Amino acid sequence: MMTILLLTVHFTAADPEYPKANLLVEADKVVPADFHIVDVRAKAKFNEGHVPAARHADLGPWSKAILADKADAAFWRTELVKVSVSPRKPTVIYADDVRDAARAWWMLKLAGVPDVRILNGGWKAYTTAKLPVQKDSPAATVEPFDWTPDPTRLADKKHVLDQLRAGVICVDARTTAEFTGEKKMAKKGGHIPGAIHLEWVELLDPKTDKFLPPKELIKLVQDRKIDIDKPAVTYCQSGGRAAVVAFGLELAGCKNVRNYYPSWGEWGNDEDTPVEVKKQ
Image (cartoon, rainbow, N blue to C red; front, side):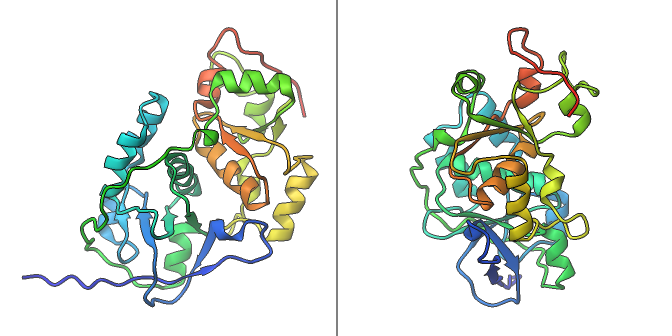
């Protein structure tokens, strides 16, 4: 009989100068810890090696359910028990790409999970720190839980249209070419009228893939004239880059951020949605 050694990883808190530092963790030495750990990389990569005690999550079915308006309490009750997520422990997400980690973070917050954190720098940071890797994964260890999804995490087209009239901030996480309309990823090019451009990569250190230090992150948000006390809606092409910006804005202290998950894939292909095309 094969014996599986169950190791757990201790994650240290992020720099406390972040306004919402509890959203981010850093990889540290291996000691007993009290986290659910979710790996959202490709399953093949997970099988090659992962953080000890991590469970693998496939975001595809979650995304489809959200877009089809079927991600209700019953859906999350079934899905989250598969990856051993419960409200009793914080959940740490990691990936190869911060867009996947942020998408998973946002989905879990939408599901109603109270404490979800991202591993700063993801799998790259973990392996750079030369921490242990495990190939075996334990079975799910939590009981099914009746989640209460949080609809304030999601913006739909109607919400965005209504909020435009109310002056709510829209933040465009796409490239400059997409924002200006030079690059069309839908029938229409351009951006939502009045949107602020903040490309998702600007939130990250390009060498480490970690989020900018607190002072730099806060300055970036302030320089873009984003009022952290006002509601905001992020969008991109299909919700992933928008999730990174939603996470970054919350990390910087924003109090009410929604992800327009269908994003430009819906807005840019709708004949009736307003579009602004101009240079920055």
